[in-house]
Length: 413
Image (cartoon, rainbow, N blue to C red; front, side, top):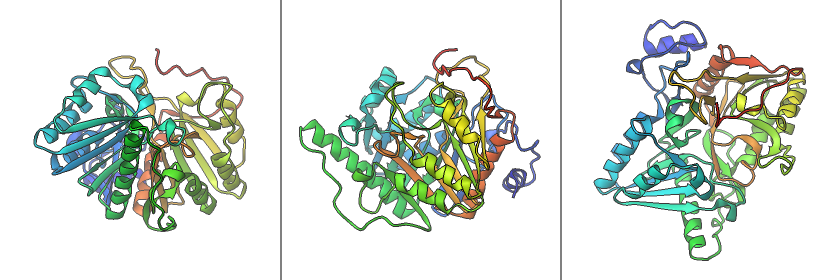
C-alpha cells in the first residue's frame, strides 16, 4: 500500500500532494496503532514532511503523565528545555503529576549532564515527589545510558529515538512507540529497575548487581523488546547485538534502514575508534545473497572517518545509500537540530524495528539501549512508508562515492 493510500485511509479522503508530503495541520492528526503499540513521530517544523496519521510525542507524553496514578519512571541520556517549547508543556504535565502525589523516578546518564540545560535540571529537582538520580553507566556496562524511555504505573511505556530535549520534539525527525502490551511494558520496567538499583549500588560503594538468572530470551515471532548490554538485561529480555544480525540474516527481499549515523567503528575521538564489524558484516552478507539494502543516514554521517565506510558499502551490488539534509528552520540556525535521528528498520514488509541505538560500536555492545521488534505487517508497512517519504522526497540525495563532503559541524552554523 502506498503512503498516499495510507494517508487517504487515515484522513478519509483529505488530499495530499505526493509522497514527499506537505505540511499537515495537527488538527487532523489521528493515530496509527496495532494492538499494544502506537507509532509516534516527530516531524521537523518548517519542512515539507507530513505524517498526519501519527501523533507527536509531546501530546502522547503529556497524556501518559496525566493518566499516571502511582508512579512514573523515566530513563534519559540528557534533558534540555526551552521556555514556550513543546517540552516546556510536557514538563507542566509532569509537574502536575508530582503535585497530585505521583511518585516520579528520573534516571539520567552522568555524561549527559554536560549536554543538559542547568535550568531544566533545576526544574526537575523542584518537582514534588520526583527523585533524580545520575548513573555513570561507564562503571556498569562501559558505555552510556543512551536509551530514551518512560514507564507509567507499570502499565504503559514509551520507547523511541526522542531525547528529553525541546529540539527533539520540534526540529528533529524522530520515531517512537507508545506501548501498552503487557509483556513488553514489564520488560521495559525491568530494565529501569535494574539500572535504578545499579545507581543505588554505586552510590553506596557496592558492586552493581547482576540480573537474577531466568529463562533465556528466545523470541522469534510476535512483538518483543531487546536491549543492550546483554550482561545487564533482566531475564526474558533478548540481546540487541545478537537479534539485529539474526533479523538481517532472515531477510529475503528488502531491508530499509534509517539512522542518524552508521559506520563499522565504535564511537569516540578520532584515532581511538576500534573496528566494530557486527552490523556491517550482516548487511554485506544480506546484500551478497541478493537482498536490496536501502540505507538512509543524516548529513552528520559525512565526517572524514566514517564517510569512507559509507562509500565502501554503497559500492556493493544491491546496496543504495542516501544522505538526508533537512532545511534550516524559519527562525534560523538551531544547534544540534534539523537532522534525522530516527533509528528504524523494516524487513520484507513483515518486520519492524524501532529503537534507540545508532548503528555504531558502543551502542549495542556496552551502552544501555532499547529496541522493539514487531512481527506485524501493518506496522512494518507504516515504518517502510516513513522511510519512503524521505527516500523519495526532496531532502535525500544518493551518496556520490566520488565526491568530497563537508565535515559536519552540527553545533555551529
